[in-house]
Amino acid sequence: MDKKPAWLKVNFNQEAVNEVSGLMAKLKLNTVCKEANCPNLGECYKKHTATFMILGRQCTRNCRFCNVVHGKPEPVDPLEPENLAEAAVKLGLKHVVITSVTRDDLPDGGAGHFAACIRAVREANPNISVEVLVPDMKGDTDSLDIVIAAKPDVFNHNVETVKALYDKVRPEADYARSLEVLRYAKAAAPDMYTKTGIMIGLGETEQQVCELMDDVLAVGCDILTIGQYLRPSPAHVEMKEYITPEMFARYKEIGEKKGFSYVASSPLVRSSYRAEEAFRARGMEKRV
Image 1 (tube, rainbow, N blue to C red):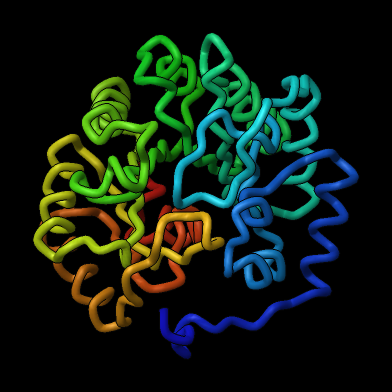
Image 2: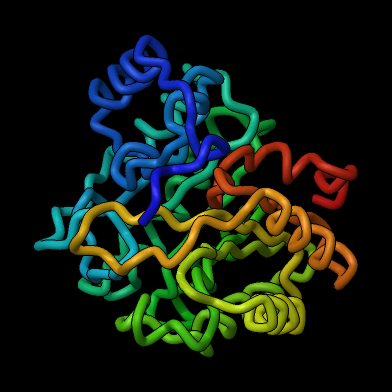
C-alpha cells in the first residue's frame, strides 16, 4: 500500500495521553482507544474523552480487522462499574461511551455488566448521557433486553462492513444477525437512538455501501458512522485503498438524503469519535 496520505496524519499529544492513561491505570480501567490503537487517541485524551472498554482486554473472537487482543478472557471485575463512573466524573464527561470485548464465554454475553455500568454512571451523575457499543451477544434477546432495560441514551452495534465481505473480514459474525440486533433494540425501545458504524477501504463498492445504508435504515437505525479502515498489522485483513475525503463527503450526503438523523463520514471517523457531537446534533438529545 502506498504511503499514508496527508489527510490521515494526526498530531499525538503525549502529555494528554499520559494524564488519561494514568487515571485509567489507577482505576484498573481499559479504553478501546488504546487497545484498538485508535489514531484519534491523542485528540480525544486532550479533550478528556475516552471510550471505556469493559469486561477485560481479551476478546473471545478474533476478527481479522481488529487490534484488540484475542485470548483467554479475564474474570469480570465487580468493581469496574463503580470505577468507570468515578473516572467519568473525574474527567468531567457529559457523554460516556461504553464498549466491550466480545465475551461469548459468559451466559449473558456481558449484558448484566453493561447494565451495571450504565446504572453506576447515572448514579454518579444523572446528567451524563450514556452510549453503549455492544457486541452481538449471539443475537440472544434476553441479553439484549438486559442492556436495553438499563435505558442507555444511544444503543450502538457496528455492522462493520458490507455483506459481501463478512466471510473475509468478520468470519465469526453474521451480517443478518447484526441487523437483527439493531432491529430488536429499536423495536424494544423506539425512543432510544440506535447507531451503527462501518469501515471502508476493504474493497467494497459504492453500490454495496449504499445497500448497507438501506439495510440499516430498514431496521430503524438513526446514526451512521463511516471511517477509513487502517490495517493494524500484516496479520490482519488487507486494506485495499485509501478513500478520499471527497468520497467520504459523498457518502455523508447520500446517507443524509436516505434519511439518517446523523451521518459522521470522514477518514478518521471511528464509531465513538466525537460521539457526544453526534448525540447533541440537531437537538437529538431532546428526545430522551
